[in-house]
Image (cartoon, rainbow, N blue to C red):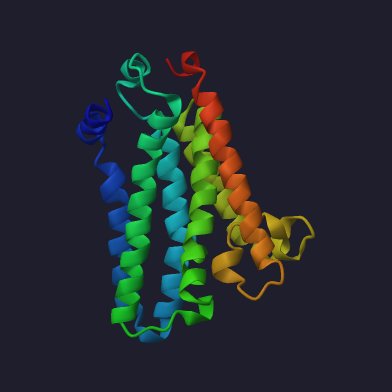
Length: 220
């Protein structure tokens, strides 16, 4: 059953899940080259900390319900958790590969990205925002039963948090909910608490999405 499920996933996967992130990756490679070494760190941080999470959130919003034969999937003896994982996991894997590939590009370009911290901190700089927006995007899509709604709400949260990140960083509660603290405010005293809070919220959003996905009649 697992083998047939994987075969189904490969046969029905949409190519936009691949070319859309790849197009942005290539675009920021070009931008990094054109801007030159003096700006490549800012370009790298912008791609890893802002663009990658946005793409992940939008792709996750479309990843679950944008299945032309979802009704047939519900008729198979496959759990909701497995179906949800099979639709969201490819998006995360692609984002992870894109993040690592861009870091290799920056390294080959001779750029020091240690201002973001250790190697582990660099990974958290894209991982925490990406998981947060992916979890939010998929939950909003499942809650509204509309992929476009999930994508739009993800974009709205992205814009508000990116523009108002200074306010969030100073607010007593907002500092724990700022998605972009890891890549852009690395010296904030609440950084670790922020990362832990966002990780737990991401887990909560995924669990809530999983519970909503059990109500299959909403998506038929």
